[in-house]
Length: 294
Ligand code: G1P
Image 1 (cartoon, rainbow, N blue to C red):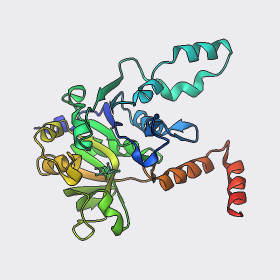
Image 2 (image 1 turned 180 degrees about the vertical axis):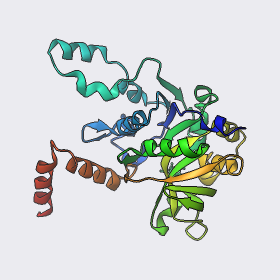
Image 3 (image 1 turned 90 degrees about the vertical axis):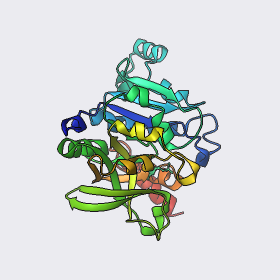
Image 4 (image 1 turned 90 degrees about the horizontal axis):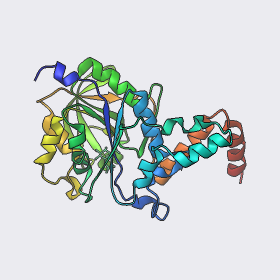
């Protein structure tokens, strides 16, 4: 395999969104958790905005039962747009939801068998190209965004990349963890990967934070894979098997990350983003002071 085939442009992104969202019940009984809003955008919109900023053209949603609202959100809403136009309302607000025809594909994950299995469900659409993965629970705010930072690194080194960040050592067991090699600027060579290790067994406190650029060969690796941590087909295990066969690097994200899979992280993201919005910041700050004063 030549280096050039490991540097093809990244045009496609997979968004695994089939999860049941049990941590946010009952809110997520009838609404996908990815549609819960952080202020006035659903969580999934932040990941899609980040993807488009990075030059991603085709969005591949791996969905499941009860998740069609996500696809609807990025569809052309004929009745809504026509009515808004008749009432001379500004349609600009809908711009982030506009995906060019043919550039949104949904595939179904029929049984919840893990992240690796969800990604594998997209194999026919991904085809023989490198692709990005976004876990929308992880809200990444940076200038440029996380995926754009990763694409810049990819253009330099090619191969496979994951975004990483440091967490306190006692938290590593909730994540995929890297065994780091040589470091150069934001790039770290990845020598090993382990999913949800015990604190004692963790090779570092650098965790995989929900953004990936992978070569299509990972699909074949996933195909023949046994269940791993939690009895699920783990993406981390498939990636670990590719180390040594293809370049594998981690990019330390310059920016802020919010874990919107947790309730406190979700509230933190909401408050932080509200305080960063010129149209709301002053009012929100005053409101927060009032709330904290009891
Ligand atoms: C998944 C990945 C894990 C990664 C994490 C980031 O875990 O398997 O490697 O660190 O996402 O959020 P999950 O949160 O699905 O258990």
